[in-house]
Image 1 (cartoon, rainbow, N blue to C red):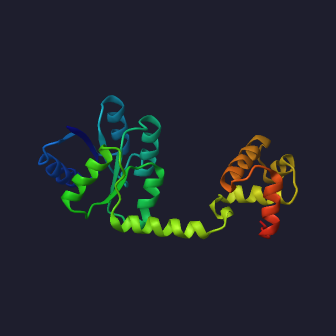
Image 2 (cartoon, rainbow, N blue to C red):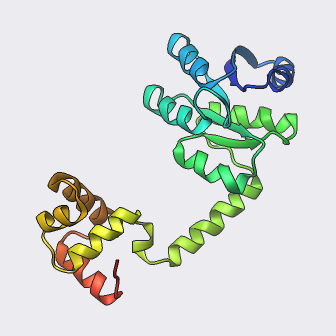
Image 3 (cartoon, rainbow, N blue to C red):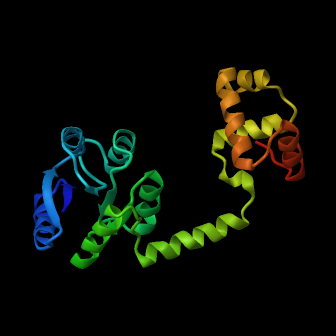
Amino acid sequence: MIKILIADDHAIVRAGLKQIIEGIPDMVLADEAANGWELLEKVRKNEFDVIVLDITMPGGGGMEVLKQLRIEKPKLPVLALSIHPEDQYGKRMLKAGAAGYLSKESAPEELVNAIRKVYSGGRYISANLAEKLAADLARRSDAPLHEELSDREYQVMVLIGSGKMITEIASELNLSVKTVSTYRTRILEKMMMKTNAELTHYVVTHQLSI
């Protein structure tokens, strides 16, 4: 029996989801939550198999709650449910750790399939979202490596490429030496490089500047 907790701030939505789940032999609605804090409190006190999470709720938005769940219950699958378009929130929720993303406009049988999929350890995305993710991946494969860097990482990389020392960069950006060193490590990992010399060569070759 799949024990499900539904988190949604609209009682009518919870009632509709409850009605769907109650008609499925291998599922049971174990509990409900009307906001993010209530959800976290119940998850800390009880065991559930799947969380169905509305991504826009009071008491901590769905994104923040999801990140906290990933810390406290990393193996608990979360199915994000939303009225928002998939291309706006689907990719972000999956990247944040959701096991699946489903529109509230989906058919009841799709919800049931999604719950079973994430419960079994899989990921659930609609065909439409899968197509968008594939298109994004294709675009990224053709994009320069430095486009994967955050703004601060890019800034640090360009300064390293200009020949500046870690201490100089820390002073210029008003950061600690340790923080700049951490950025350097992340940059090398993302750029798939090992040395400052490689970074410098890349910066010069691509004529990068801040």
